[in-house]
Structure formats: structure tokens, C-alpha cells
Length: 326
Figure 1 (cartoon, one colour):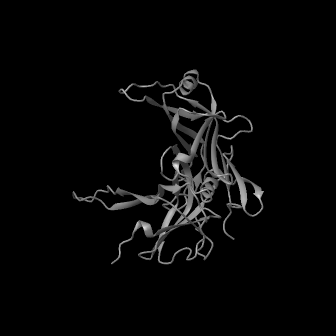
Figure 2 (cartoon, rainbow, N blue to C red; figure 1 turned 60 degrees about the vertical axis):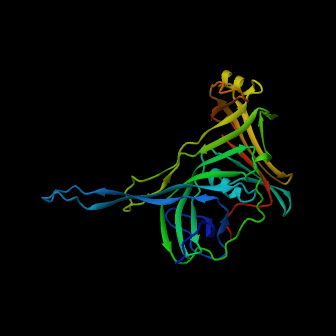
Figure 3 (cartoon, helix red, strand yellow; figure 1 turned 60 degrees about the horizontal axis):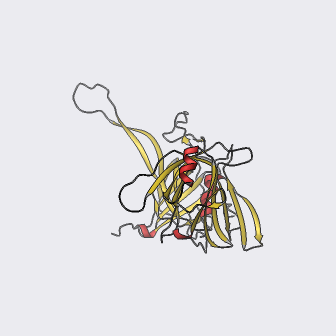
């Protein structure tokens, strides 16, 4: 009997119209997305009934609440990454740069965002086994920039309502974003208030949405009744080589500044992620030996100024929009 393999797995995605109702299977209606790992799994609490029955045997194991949570790591393909950004931050404002071939999408966090829900299909094609996961929402996004020879990637935390298994796949002929070039680590650039940040060697963004499943409303089911929205949060860190006082002075003075990361493949294919206003936590530069000195400084996002988002992503690529397939 064949064993399921990760390299034969396929991730199918489509926006979902209503909570609790998975999108129906249909050919050519789902996107197939690339990924490094996918760990969104169902769980169920089991309790032990403690009714007294006149002996020392345990009570029945009682089924409890059912949830789904986990994460996935994906390549920062400059066409497919826009799908993830739209689920996390909302639909972008899109401009046509060159009709039919080049578009610019601007994603921004909103003070009162609409919550996107999705249906995911996980197909293990080597063993012909398939799973449908419904009412999925993105809870956080983590992106790291560092100079290396690996393809840039992002990690998203997810939650959902329920998983069901079945034999047929949701889509036998899904659509892929192609081409889907991903920049490598050394193509990343970092700037502070528009100027090059020469001493920064790595930077991390962690954008959170604060959503949680509604497991209190009496819906007659073990699964959540809805997913409740929460409060945006932004934090992260920058790693530095101790070459100048820029980062130390910003942290020590508590000065707010704009931190921007940019990955460029060409003039028509790039991604910029900008935090308009962050503050560094105070820290120092440890001396751990005779070599080059380095340090790490954590940061948090400020409450956005009027007309500004907490985080903004600008994506230039060949994708016209991030709507469902018709």
C-alpha cells in the first residue's frame, strides 16, 4: 500500500461566501498554491465523565469542542503572495501600469476590516485521499528579510471551523499563478525613513489580527458559531551589525520611524512592505567575544496616524486581481 508523501500534496483555495458552508467542488474554480509546509489541523477536546457508578472504573470519554488551527509557510512568489496578502489585509487598490501585463496592488490594514473566509482543499494525490476545510481565516503574518541564498518566504497562522474527508478532490483542474517568480534573500533591501539602513542584517515583521473562534454562542454544534474579529497588532525585530549609532539612538530616544523592506526581481515585479510608524525597545550591544559585534532590537507598531495604515504592502506583478475564479 502506498504511503502519502508531502511532495504529492496539493493546496486548493477559494474564497467562501458564508460561514459554515464550504465552497462546492468544481473544475477550474480553485487556485492551486505553492507551499513549503501546511499544518492547519482539526482538534477535539475529550473529557472524562465523572458520574458515580459504584466502582473504580473511569467514566465514559466525552467528546468536546472541535476547532481548527495551525500555520503554513509559502514562497513569496510575486504573483501568488498577493492572494495571501488579500486574505490577511483585505482587497487591494489596484492600478493598471501596462494593460494586460503589469499591475500594482496596494494592500493596507483597515481600522474596520472585513473578515475574509476561505475553503481549502488538501489533496493527497498519491493515495487519492482528499480533505475539505471550511471557514478558514488568516490570523497572523510573519515575514523575515535576511541576506541568504534561499527563496524569500512568509508564514501565516490560520484558524477554521471544520475538516471533512472525502474521496473526490475539490478541483481536478485547478489554476496556478504562473509564472510565479520568488526573490531570494539577498535581493531584500531595508530602509529607515526612506534612507538605506546599512547596519541592519535582518528584519522581522509579525502582523496579527487578533481574531478568535466563537465557541460560546449556542449553535447546537461542537464547532464554532462564527469567527470574531479582533485588534490589529504589529511587532517584530531588527538585527544589526554594530557599525553606527542609528538603531541605538532611535531606540534610546524612543523616536518613531518608518521601516520598509523591499524585494525586487525587476521593475515590473517587486514587493514592498512598509510599517509607517514603529518604535524600538531600548537595548544595548553585548560583547560576546573578539569578533564583529551584533545586537537585536525589538519593535512595536504605533497607533496609525489619520489616513495611515498600520502596515502597507505594495506589490507589482502580472496579476490583474485577486478575486475568485469565475
